[in-house]
Amino acid sequence: MSGVEVTPLCDAVGPMGVAIRRPLAEMFPDSGLQDEPWVLHFHCYLIRDAAGRLTLVDTGIGDEDSPAASWAPVPGTLAGELAAVGVSPAEIGTVVLTHLHSDHASGVVADGRPAFENARYVLQQAEVDAAQGPVLDRLLTPIKGQLHVVEGHAEVSPGVHVHHAPGHTPGHQIARVGDVAMTGDLVLHPVQLADPAIRYAYDDDQEAAARTRAEVLAELRAEHAILATAHFGEPFLRL
Ligand SMILES: [Zn+2]
Ligand SMILES: [Zn+2]
Image 1 (cartoon, rainbow, N blue to C red):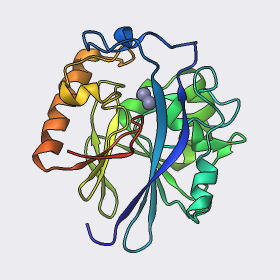
Image 2 (cartoon, rainbow, N blue to C red):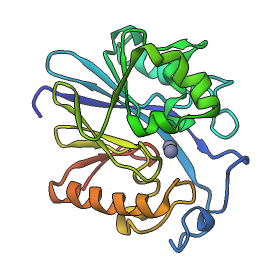
Image 3 (cartoon, rainbow, N blue to C red):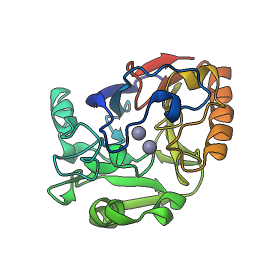
């Protein structure tokens, strides 16, 4: 899509903390993966359209004491990554949250206040409905005045679309701009590209997640889209 730039912002790199770490063969049953260390990247993506409008997809693991602190390599460096590409938080007009897991949503707040003060925060209705605990109290409640809740497909900024892709969580969504698909936790490990039926232990609904993964990947493959994942080592992958 002409004039649109998608910039990966690597918020953090590291293994899962011991609180939730399991051998890979348990995380991805029947995958044939050996028990090697799994080092995750935590990518967010910045979209700048031809008119200069800025959309951020996901907000990373957050501060030292964020809800992700029990298992992710906090603090995230998203603010510094944005500064490095010359963007201040106040310039972001739209924030798409693929889902409300703490490694994607904890950066919505800084010191308990909305980190992107001028942004609308886009979430699926089903994700809002399912929110509870620290995610609800510490992440969703502070931004509730800026929420833009959608159901299913929506164009959230000119040329930027979200699509409901449930299974990993009830309201998980992916974001599209041009031929790039920012897929959140639709796929967690490259082994699932070869076989989308391979389950992930932390998918809320493993069956729905596998079905969604197979459908969405087939569509993206048919158009040779560019996959922009949250957790792979490489931010972009042409299908
Ligand atoms: Zn997740
Ligand atoms: Zn994730």
